[in-house]
Length: 300
Image (cartoon, rainbow, N blue to C red; front, side, top):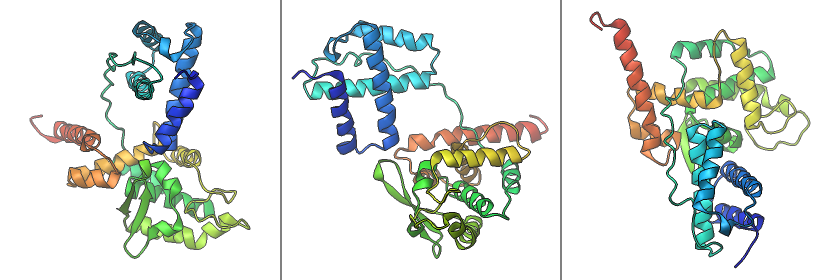
């Protein structure tokens, strides 16, 4: 069966949504990567997906190298296109997968960035709590650090997902997987303060949509909004460098392991499907131990 490349992409997107149950963010990234490859095909005058050869793929890899893409980014694009063609072969839309023999570039082993406990205290101290927005921001920071949840998960939290008696939150994770995550007394107190004395004021006369965090217009807070809030907090503190929401997630995991938590527990709390995803934090904690040793031992 012959179909155009855009029709093939549409079928692949439906397959990811219905059969694979991928998140919207993953689907958008796949769509972007495949569309970029379509542009490459047009430049190379390749008329159809079935006519892409291994040599064309090598040229595509060279283009990525010339653009100085990070190895992790290049590997992600190749993996995406390999999956796309695997689907096309399965559906008998093409005969061969030209990406099947391409080896993925090894990604750089970069350790996750995290805050030391003293640094985090400076960030918390920079929060003002006199205004409704200030109360919301403090609750947001406490929840992100206190649970290690992803920003996308944080923005999906509804009031009904919170259990203040057990101090747990129902988190809607990747691939529609759900997990219960506990939060501590600091997050507990700041969340209650925000809900009782700030949230309704931020909602104003808008109908309550049920989401926990509200923006200044009364709508649900978005991931982009969270990044803006954290950047503003960071600017108001005396900290140097950069902040991103995932840094709080890295900090959560690193502090747990540094204080004796076992790997399996941290894996469950983070919502990692594979233990290998969590094991990167052992490198962080090992490096932390090494630095402590080198700076404190008389014979180091």
